[in-house]
Image 1 (cartoon, rainbow, N blue to C red):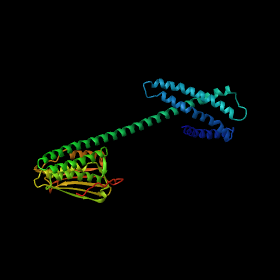
Image 2 (image 1 turned 135 degrees about the horizontal axis):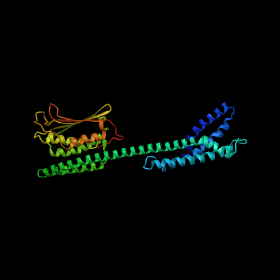
Image 3 (image 1 turned 30 degrees about the horizontal axis):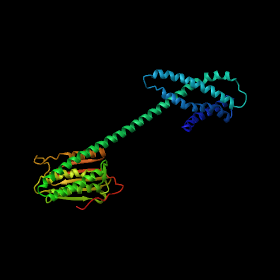
Image 4 (image 1 turned 135 degrees about the vertical axis):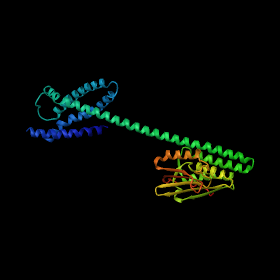
Length: 362
C-alpha cells in the first residue's frame, strides 16, 4: 500500500517541480533541478504520510448518511488541521534540506505559507476524501454485484435440483406401479425390473447435484430405464438409436432424455395394442448439439383425435434447458403430419473432459 501511495504522490510532485523550476527561471531567480526537487517533494511526500490518516477520517465521517452536514463541517475542521500540520512540518523540512541561509525566519515564513497554500491544501484533502469515497463505492458495488451473481447461481442451482427431484418421484411411482401390476403375471420379470430400478436409482444418486454429464453416460442411464420398459412391453417396444460418435462426448443435462423417452413410451407404445417404435438421435452441427426423441404413436392431431402430450417430462425438460442455457438453446415438441410425436432440442456443443464408458449394447 505504501509503495502505491508514494508512487501516486510522486506524479504531482514531479509536475510541481517542473512548474516551480520554470517559474523561477522566468523570474530570474533560477534554481537547480536538485533545489527544485528539494523544495517541492517534501510537501508532496508529507501528503503521502498523511494519506492513510485522511482515508481513515473519510471512512469515519461519511457524507451519505443522516449526519452528512455535521460530517462536512468536521471535514472542514480536519482539513484545516491537516493543512496546519502539512505546512508547519513541510517548512521545517525545507529549511533543513535547502542549503544556505533562509530569506525569512521560520515565524515570518509560516504566515506567508498559510496565506498562499491553505486553500490548496484544503483542495488536496478534499481530493483524497473524494477518491476514498469513490473507491469505497466501487468496491461496495463490485461486492454487491458478486453477491448478487452468487445468489443467482445458488438460486439457479436450487431450481435445477428441484426440477430433478420433481422427475425422480414421478418416474419411481410409475415404475413401482408397473412392477405391482407385473407381479401377478411374471414374478421373475418383476424382480428384474426391481433390480434395474435399483441400479438406475443408485446411478441417479451418484450424480445428484451434477447438472451436466457426457451424452454417453446419459445414454447409459437411458439404457437401464429401457430395460425396465422392455420387461413391461417385451413384444411391443422397439427402440432405435442413431447417435454420432462425436456426439457421445458432448455435455448434456443430466437425465434429460429419460423423461422424454418415458413420455414417448407412455403415449406412443403403452396406449397402442400393437406397440410402437421410439427413436433417439444425436448429432453435432458445427458448435451445436442436436438431440431428438421421436415415437410413431398417435400424436395430438389437428382434428382433435389425438392425445395432447402433457405431463412432468416435457415441462421439466423445457424448464431445465432454459435454466442451463437460456437463449442458447431451442426446444420444440410437435406432431409431424405423418403421425407420432417428436421432441427436438439444440444446445451448445461442449466436449466432456473425460468421456465415460457406461453405454451397454441394447
